[in-house]
Every structure is written in structure tokens, then in C-alpha cells.
Amino acid sequence: MLSKFKKRIVQILGVLILLVLCFFVFKKINLNPNYEVGQEIDSLNGVSVYYNGGVGNVDGRELTKDGYNLGLKYQCVEFVKRYYYDALKHKMPDSYGHAKDFFNPLVKDGELNTQRNLNQFINPSSAKPRVNDLLVYSGTLLNKYGHVAIISNVTANGIEIIQQNPGPFGDSRENYILVNEDGKWRITNDWIIGWLRK
Image 1: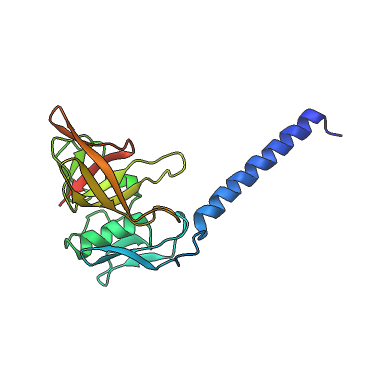
Image 2 (image 1 turned 60 degrees about the horizontal axis):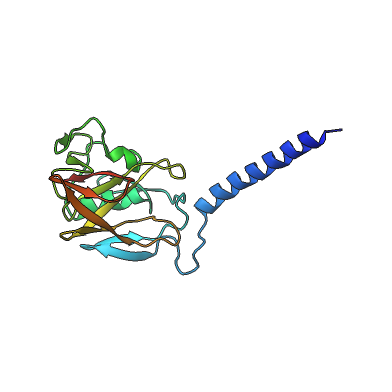
């Protein structure tokens, strides 16, 4: 017969396992009855943003007619690559990788990121963000893959981004404060590590 201590440990482990399983299930299912997976919810310059449901949902791989890999359907990476391909006529030399992998920490501010064939800027940077820049977020405890978005508007003291797959109840548009400190432009979100530009 198990001691009370061992029973308690088994109960705690059971609850933890159940919580982890629930977390992964909820990342995959659609909890928002207002949208269906694959439904267009926004657009920028004629490029659609589609609803993905749970952030971990995957609905196959999206390829262009010429075989270029855009990424997993309705994930954030698929939108930014489709935007760059359709709106800016840009193909990335390395068409694979998670969102956070778009940013190469070895590339200096303003230099060419050869994997993406885009100039890379570090948050903060001497270069002010521009419309159409690809914004890169680091990974987090709950999202180890990071996130990417497109800058859709820039003002004197802020930016607006458009994104795909912000979560079942997230918005396709968000705004961040932009400040200039000691000659460097900083987007005031600690998860934003930088931006890329054609």
C-alpha cells in the first residue's frame, strides 16, 4: 500500500500531466465560434490574413505554383512569406525555419541577412521601422517558435502590425509604441528582436 506522501506525489503528477495535455489540445482546436479555420479575416495590399484557430493548428503546407515553400497553412510564417512573395515579389533563399529563425543574431544592425536576402535591423536600431518591414519576435515559454508579422503603418511614435495566427481570440492588428532614444529607434515590446527589410 502506498504511503500518503507517495499518493500525493502521484496525484500531483497526474494533475500536471493532465494540464500539459490540455495545453497542447487547446493549442490545436478552434475555441472561437465566430470564425472557421481558413476564413479570411483581414488583408494588406491584397494579401489575405486567414484565421487559424488554435495557435498550434496546422492544415498542410502551402506551396506556390512554382514550388516555393510558403510554410504551414495559416501559421504566422506562411502569411509573411506569402506577403513578401505576392506583394513584394521576393523569394527567400532559405524558405524554411520557425518564426524566430528569420532573425539571425550574428548579423549586425543594417547588414544583409543572407538566409532571407533582406536587410536586418536589431531592436533598437539606428534605422526607423518602415511599412512592409517583417517584424520578428523571440520565442517564449509558451511559444518556443517565436512569431512574425508585417508592419502595416508607421507614425512618429508608433507602429501598427498585421499578423496571422495570434491565437483564437487575438486581433490581426496590433499597435506598439515607437521611441527614439539616443538616436536609436526602439519598438517597446520586449519580445520584438528586430525587423527585416527588402
